Image (cartoon, rainbow, N blue to C red):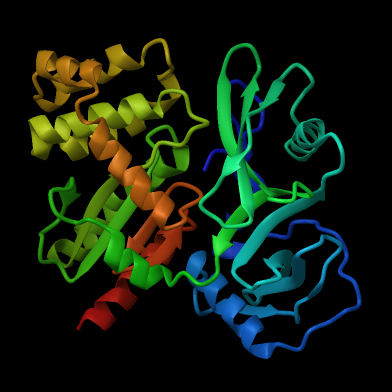
Length: 369
């Protein structure tokens, strides 16, 4: 997940942060005194957060009882994560019907909703006045009782887009993640993820399958790819396979083009997919919109892929359906940032450390046996 763009201003992705498997606090309004003693609800939220963000069992997670918030239609609670070194608190919100959990920031809207949305986004993400913000029309979203709007940020050199949510009564803006509390992520992952005819490394009948959703313009994805390729796969041998899924994020200006080329290479010469992907990651810092096509065609020569065939596939976007399928899966699984992996169905967000992945694979091997 990128915090800074190459153009130098902060992009949307940082509403929710994950560091070493621990949620980091985000400031919100103080709750009112109308408290609730629903222990079962608190346990459900804690279990969901642990599963959703891949928080290891060694980290203690607790929640205060949900209370009425200052925002109509929402309850609030404080989540505490404690790794034995430094407890961290973050406030979360829950819709009154107990269906949707909000991790991020809520803002009250009044008469000039579009102007207020621009103001709150600019302040929250510290965007300079030179960066113009345009709020698109409101539309129905995948979450009942929420409308979605696409906001475009333009600093004169680069445009970035991101979807945000408002309640259907147009009274509350959400700058954060809207998560379906009723979604069993592991069960949904095992049901939704397509594993056949996909780019992969490792034997098809390995005990552990890692499904990685990545953006080729994301530096953290590059670090994870290097770890998987050079450390994890050699360590576990035929016990692990990795399936690669494309999830280009809308705020990145050349990641979609790279994803199309990557999937073209898979269609032309499957064995060249992984080394081609590595070249894209290795050259992130020198890639831009102006040179991305020439760079992608140049990598073809290095991995033995016919440049003319790749150019035809890339220019016609013949592999775009494969990219779109990966993105659809990611959205179905409520993936909010890259890299995100599923290890035998268990979600692990980001790249907290190589040790975190080793522990997750060891646990999956134990469960498989």
